[in-house]
Image (cartoon, rainbow, N blue to C red):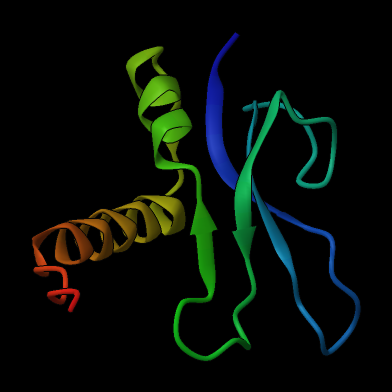
Length: 93
C-alpha cells in the first residue's frame, strides 16, 4: 500500500479550501483519506497553510511520499517553524 501526502479539495467554486491528507496513491483525489494533516486556503493573507508537522514527519518516516506541491509546502512550513523558533521572545516587564 503506497501512501501519498497530497491535497484534497473540499471548498466551493471561487472559494478554494484544500485538506492536506495522507491517502493511498491509487485512491481518488477527494476519496477516502487515511489521516487529515491540516488545511490550505490559497486566498488567505499571511499564512494560508496550517499543517501538523509532527504528523507529517511521522508519515514521512513510514514511507509516505509527498506530491511535488506538498513537498514545496512542507519546505515552506519547516522554514516558517524554524524562523519562529529562532526569534527571541520579548522581555516581560
